[in-house]
Image (cartoon, rainbow, N blue to C red; front, side, top):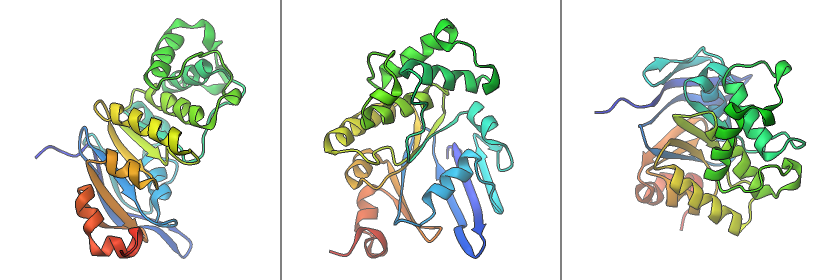
Length: 247
């Protein structure tokens, strides 16, 4: 059996008396799209933050590509192929689309933010930045991020993640705040990307989850209560009671 690209074992994270992740086990296989669903407060974003390195777990291990990264900082994880997009858009509004992606590329290379070069004049930054913008379908790269729509900002954030040359995309609610048309566009985009990247997708849009996921894991109170195909999870009585609702 193929070794998981990402393997989480017995992960625990406490905030005082609150247990955000509770002896959580999870894995993502190479090339797989795993959707992580669960009610608000289930611990999904806390888990993603631990995977990225923004939060340090109290117990347990995180392995990526066979390497124990539990204690490694976020910037090192980014350099070995973990890239995250956020539930709330996280871009530089006054920068151009091209500038935002170029800065992501520069950051991956390890340059200090205090010494940003003029990213628009460096072909080693602008060329891959334009490629990433093309992949997500964003034209007019000189537009300011502040001037584009919410849906386009989410596409920009995804381009910034792709510019990090990821092996695994950690996507935290990429459809958040989108209307039906923008959500459908993002679903089509992620459907194309899943052919090239492993993806861990946290998402409340069940249409997107069931359209994209190879497997679905259901998180409740910091624990995975079910994992399987979309159809199997949809039919699971425990899941229906805890999250999807009884019908």
